[in-house]
Image (cartoon, one colour):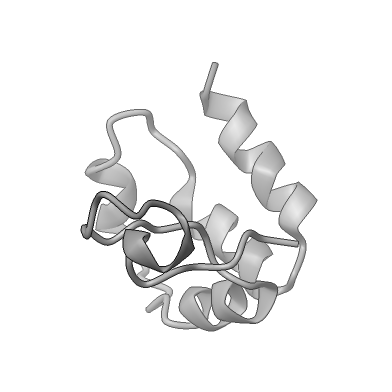
Amino acid sequence: VFPQRKDWAGDSVSHTRLEEVNLGLTKEQAIQEAQRCLDCPNPTCMQGCPVSINIPTFVKNIERGEFLEAAKVLKETSA
């Protein structure tokens, strides 16, 4: 579902650069990362977001494996 992450560009992305390249997470990795959310009563992550994304809702959708719903949350406030 998600592109696999490669640790270094030299692995298969580029033979001329050695900086880290993030190519995404597996479905399982995305869910695991979403489970780290602290479920704050007053989420400051939203206050710090310059485009006002409903981050808690986005993260909870990822945690449940509802990736299309998560994408809809992003689309609500992004052009």
